[in-house]
Image (cartoon, rainbow, N blue to C red; front, side):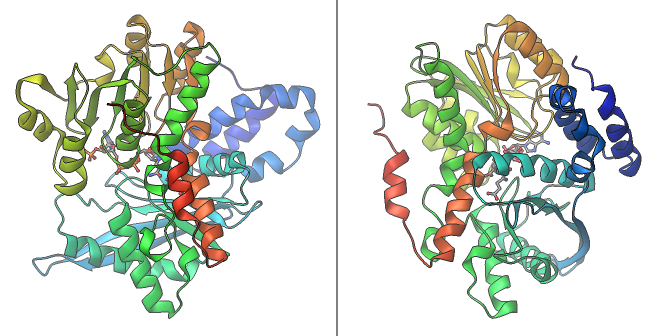
Length: 408
Ligand code: NDP
Ligand code: 2IT
């Protein structure tokens, strides 16, 4: 495993001490500090300044109560977060996550990573992240609407097109952004479309923002293959998750001639040797909001559902973790390596554990880190902000640019 340069050890120790129990945040900071070893070796003066310490300390952390009324008339209570991490390059920018596991440590790891990812896009966007420990699963549209309205009733005072611009992440897609934008507009009496990205294309959204993260991850894989004169054609690909990132990663893989042999959700995974039927999967996940098990039920004998278990047991040439943090462990990496997997690209944020990444490096598996491989989503968000700022829509040209004819 890589070690921390001794000059950076006090910085890391201080982060752990100041942020007790926030293990995902510690993990994300450690990974970046390890990568800075060669920099401080060459420029010891950087280790001594406040620059690196400041990068690890959010500019502002907001925690708030979100009360809302469920369909039976009961008052429910959740906790909301927005961590405004760094505004050196532009307004804070990053998604909102609604998932029961959300707490400050997860929001901070995501906001920290977002700062670097956003810088890498070359667009003028700072880094931030937010969310709530709200579980949308099993909730009606009306409940999700009331939750979003209550969440925005507090959040609105902290955001703005020049201040902080949230978007989607786990549990937050077009439906939620719509409810959030409606409430923002109502409270502020401003049609400030640049305050949120991932909006519908009829009201300020950018074409291809929905597809951008997943497509971008696959474009990244294609560039990796090009360096050795290969392509995705006939490659067997495993995509974890079956949400926004996973679905559009799978779509682009199929367009490029690859076969998506397995996909998952938090209950288990499905395998389909001749390739998943993405239209059916989209119907199940995007329209019916049902479980991956239903895919296997609907497909019959050609598909197989495995409850629990690890999707990384399925042999493949390319692995695209597109679900959540730490979903690909050292044991999973060992299995992938044994099965001859050649490329791993992170569609999700921090899906590979440090031990898994190390194993890939040691084995010569080509590995695309999330800060680069999933940056297509936020880069397209920045284009959406530009369109909103100019009161313009350049949407149709962009859609044409990234679509390629489906393979027959
Ligand atoms: P979605 O909510 O659309 O989908 C998430 C998928 O991952 C679902 O299939 C979900 O299954 C599964 N999943 C979530 N949490 C867990 C868990 N704890 N264990 C197992 N499976 C889980 O989210 P997105 O597709 O938007 O986000 C996926 C990843 O991509 C996240 O890491 C996110 O931060 C990252 N990302 C998202 C971007 C975006 O533009 N949306 C941009 C860049 C990165 P289930 O339904 O059963 O919970
Ligand atoms: O992790 C991410 O890059 C996102 N969830 C998208 C952020 C955005 O502002 O589009």
